[in-house]
Length: 89
Image (tube, rainbow, N blue to C red; front, top):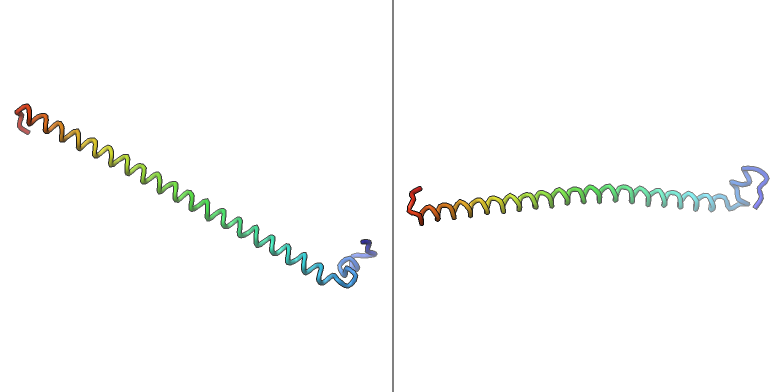
């Protein structure tokens, strides 16, 4: 299409209101979609980081528990060995 001036371009042969409303609705829809994606990504990344920290704490607690259990078992066996040798504690 060829328009003589900018005002006839905006008027779009009488259909300007519908054309520009549809462009506006599409632009607003795309903006809302982009904003929703942006904030959802931020929330998901925050949730993933929280879960990773939680998993690290669980792993550290399990390792600490295993170390404490191993130490207690070694201490019990040393005590039992001393008793079998006739030593008093």
